[in-house]
Amino acid sequence: MSGITNFFGCEINTTLNPPGSGERLETLLVMKPKPCPYPLIRIGGTGDGAYLVPDDLAGITACFSPGVNNAKDFEDHLTDDYGITCHMCDKSSDPEKFRTPLKTGLQTFKKSWLDVAPAEDCISLERWVGELSPNPEDDLLLQIDIEGAEYRNFLQTPAATLNRFRIIVVEFHGLGKILDPDIFRGVFQPLFDTLDALFICVHAHPNNCCGDFQIPDSDLNMPHVHELTLLRRDRINAAGRQFFPPMLPHPQDIARNVGHNPPLFLSAAWMDGPRAPESRIKMLEIELGDLRQRQADAQAALAALAATYALAQQAYLDILNSARNAPPDGPELTDVALAKPFTLSSAYGHFPKTGTVRRAEPFFFHTGLGAGQSITVDLADAYCIWTIRIRNRTDQCHGRANYLFYVLRDAAGRAANPAYPLSVENDFLAARCLACETQLPGLQARYIEIFSTAVTALHFSGLEIFATSLAGA
Image (cartoon, rainbow, N blue to C red; front, side):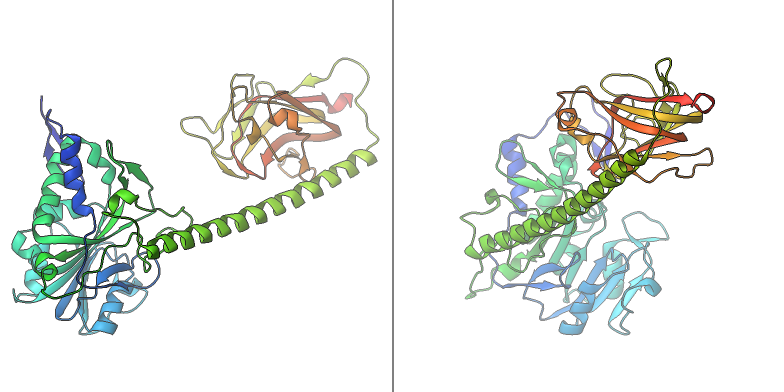
């Protein structure tokens, strides 16, 4: 059977003839950097949107940059330092929102998508280049970051237009689909065959925004978003030039595109030999900086958490020591939380954000993962609260129920007490005891909120509130 599938606007005829691992690997190695006859320089600053290009910019008359997202550090650098005219397009951007104004006579902007669709708000690369750089003898530069639309634009741009570009800097998205045999044959294989016929990859930089994955039957790790620098083949064959071996990472690479994500490195399989000493030093610098930042963040968070918990524990002891109330004599206290409605701060996956309190294994609710996760129970009436009993999740992740506090609220939702800690013991967190109890001095409340100050998810198998009615207090 066959049909049609779609990948970033590329329609693909499906097939039952998947590529072999060797065929896929041969195609992907087009992205493997090769020696370059020019040293690499960084254009565009020190953050996301900066790229390494060969120092072969002399004689380039214009840069075409689709996908600017109201930022043009790369283009400003080319204009200011190299006198290169820059043409930009992006339907989602507006010149008045740019961080820097357009430079009259040296920069242009078109509020259009770069696309092959025959629509008023789209322009093809062939038409765009033909309008603004009609002389076929002019060498150009292409910097393209258009969130997946690069595939259909490259595949439908004539080779003669692509060959106008001396240098191409491209950010490829959605590379996880390389493992889909139909998309590989319908998109990636013809795309890289086209590029390989005209260009040589001289640098690769993994964007750390989305992580990476392993190519089967190889030692190659593939980032989901990958930045490549391509140099036209006729520039490679310049006689008498010194060749600079590829360095992964390059000393001038930015450490990470997304600051809060861990750094990402290409595996040694991307190299034809051992990593250059400069690359190993760069990796150590990045890893050391990442480790220091994580240690500083963790230490600050733990210190704040420990201080908060210590203050809360002391306040709780103070109120218990000063309380003269005791549970009334008579029948056993009643669990007033059973079947009462609850609301969560967030919900994980398909689990609901609201429900009713019950006993269930492994848990009866599940918040999302984050700071300040909570469950709030509406007891439907005000009670004198004497005991809070929590039953931990029964299967795994018991240690998440840490740094727990409670706040009682009156019928109007006002806090009846500060945040006090629950009695969470190590045995409870280690699942040696699945229930923990906190004694209260008969505080009056209708609502009870339980939350954690840690970055965690909450999921209890039971929550019992033992109380007496106000009339019987």
